[in-house]
Every structure is written in structure tokens, then in C-alpha cells.
Length: 241
Length: 241
DNA sequence: CAGTTTTCGTCGGCCAGCCGACGGACAGCG
DNA sequence: CGCTGTCCGTCGGCTGGCCGACGAAAACTG
Image (cartoon, rainbow over all chains, first blue to last red; front, top):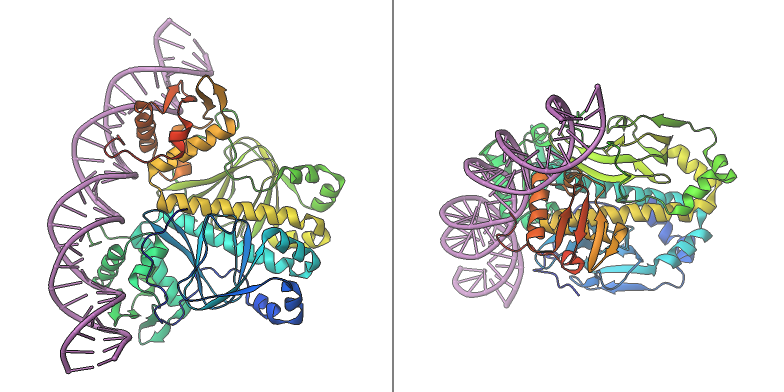
């Protein structure tokens, strides 16, 4: 079985990061806690994991559906020598693995895992849930394709800029002429999400700061001055380091 | 609207290439041609496209579901300066675009396009199709994740090797100690699938030939001697060109 | 508050892969 | 049969981004 390299700096007591790809709309979480939801999950065990624990590897857990109940779970692909975070799953998110990916709990988490077949079986008993599931799968798919796009036809600078722009739009608070943005992730974690290295992320952040697009404000906070420039970032030749 | 760069060398009378990611199991095609299938599609127009025609762009056709009836359609992502083929869709395949991708007919093709909402509506009338759809979406998703994996944690050599191994397994015929494999694609098309350039693909092919793993046999045919080496390819340092 | 651990910015060296260019090898096609 | 357009292999040059390393700044710990 493939061993995965140095563990990322997750689970260090930071506030929960944003969810890069929520698998299900919020309504699903409500359903899970309703009577119908308990009915739906009857007979399936809810397992708790300590922080940093491996939940699934490509070898184990073939063709299983995971539903995150609480906490935060990191889904990632790994190699002997490299790693890529697919997304951070949170309560109510669904993930399925006929795909060779790893799951690890970031904080303390509880999860229900079931066989894909069993899940499909249950779905036939609750046809009213189909739209939920379709939307969830559709979102997962379009997120994946967006990821393919960024990996294949954007350079690292554009990926960093895109990530920051999204963070700003999602979690930024207006501040004078710009925005205050809590990063919520270490630079190394961002690198893991973008398929690059900590050093390169850091270099690009510095370049953007040098151009007055943003300003670092402590370890975890950022002040974005020019969201517009961020959203249409093109690397200035020679300015990347 | 983004204009896309040099068109790939598709639609030149080659035999149909393999489908990198079939969206639906074969049974779905049969269903489409059954009475129930005609019922399912009632009211939706079937449009024919000449070869090489653009069917959808990120701007147009938001939130639409496409069902390919005949011919071959290339789904791809594009930039001002780069392009990546997602897959070649064939009869019976489903594709959906809440995602910024292009569709272009490779040969003469006919397609049914419908709004995602309308499609979901119809699905509720034919709940027996849900398993089909779930499987189709699941396959699409796992293909996408596999693609992310290859793009982010395999180098080009490994991607080329993986592509050739898959082609050999799917379409190779035994031949002495090895396999005869019809490529079905120009080197430039392979490059487009793997997110690299024609020259790099060519260089890797040469390197593999030099190592006795395979042998080029005319423009379109390949003789693979060591499928085993292909499947666990690691670039030999300095041997890539 | 001092000691320890984690994160961060930055540098130099290195190399995989991109790009442009070129000539040769195959096709059709008239 | 020669002509023309397409495809292929290969080269040199260049660079984005990886890697290892280092010291400084923050953040925990007691």
C-alpha cells in the first residue's frame, strides 16, 4: 500500500477553513438530523476519529460513500513523493471513493461510511432525496473540472491569485478601500491545494504585495487592496520572485 | 467570449478513437432507442452538427445536459493560449455543463441538448433511470479525479506511459511476445489529452522505443513489447530526450 | 519570561518541459 | 507521377517552478 509523505500542517487548532467543495447543499444536513434522516441511516455505524487520523486509503474502502457528520475531513490524492488536497469536507458533505484518494480527519470528526450499493439501495427507498444527491454530485463534478482547468491551463501565479480572490469574496470583510481576509490556512496548506510548494506560494504572495495588490497583516490575515487585479492576474514577466 | 487557439487535428477521417470517459453504461443507449426512451426525450430537439463544428462554449449553454446520439464529440477546456481535451464522447454518452468547457463535433454528430432543470424534471418521471444516471455521474467524477491525479502528481513521461498502457489494454491485439496497438490519435491529439505538447510526447515515445519497451510501426500503429514496463514507468534520469 | 516548535521569506542551483524552428516522411490528389 | 498539405522526430535555448537550506519572526508552553 502506498505510504504518503510528510503530513500537512493540519489540525493545529486554527478556525475551520473554508470548504473548497461542499458535496451537498445545506438542506441535506437538516435532513440527516430529521426523523427521516435517522431512518435513512438506520443500521449504519457512525464512527468517530481523533484529529489527524487516516480514515480511508486507496487500498481500503473501495466503492464506499462517506457522509461527514461533524468536524473536518481532508480528502487528498497522494503519491510516494507528492500530495494534493482535493477538498476539506465539513458537516453534511458527501464523498465517494471508487477513486484512489485518501481521507484524513483534520479535527475530531464523526463519519458514516456505507457501501455504494447499500447507499443506492437506500436511495431507492427515499426517492425524494434524488435531487439532493444529483446536485451534490453535479457540484462535486464541476468543482473537479474547475480543478482540472486550473491545473492544466493556469500557471501557479494565476492559481494563487484565484484562490485569494475566492477567499476574499467568500470570507472577506470590507475595510476602507479594500478587504480584510482571514486566510485560515498556512501557506503550506494552500500549496497543497494548488498543487505547488510552500516556497512558490510565498514568493507569489510577496510579488503581489510588492505590486500593491495586497498587504500581509500578521500570520493569518491579509488586506486585499485590489480585488479586481487579483481576479484577472497575469504574471508580470520576471516579477514572480 | 474566450476564443480558442489552433484547432486540434480532429475529424480527418481516422477510425473513431477510444472514448476516454464514457458517461453512461451501454444499457443507456439501448434505453434511448426504446419506446420509453423516445418518451423520455419527447419534446426535445435533436440537432445535427457537421464535423468540426462548435456545439457549446463556456458562455453559451449554461446548465445544460447533452446526450450524444451519434458521431463523436470532443469536450475540452480552453484558454487564450492552451487547450486540454477532457474526453471524446460517443453515442450514448452524457455530458453536462455548469462547467466552463467547450464541445465540438469531431465527425458528423447528432445531439440532444436540454436544460438541467428540464432534465431533472424528466428524471422524476422515470425514477427507474436513476441508477443509470448515478453510475454515469459517478464514472464522470472518478474519471475527473483520475485526471486531476495524473496532472498534479505524475510527470509527462508517466502520463504518456499510462495512456499507452490503457490503449494497449483496451484495443491491443496479441502479437508474438507483445501487442499490436492502433493509436487512433495523432501525437498532437495525445498531447492535448495529457496536457503537454506534441514535441514532448514525441520525445517520450522515442525514449521508450530506445529502451526497447515499444516500437513504432508506421504512423498510426505501435508494437508494445513490454506492457509491464509501461504500466510502472518511471522516467530514467537524463533519458527523456 | 526564556525555551521550544512551527511557520515564513528568501536565496542559489538545477532541471523538466515549453517554444520555435527545421528537414524528412507519409499521405492524398490531380 | 510530381505537388501539396499534414504529421513526425529532433535540436537549442529559455524559464517556471522544484528543492534544499538558512535565519528570522510568530506562536505555543510552562
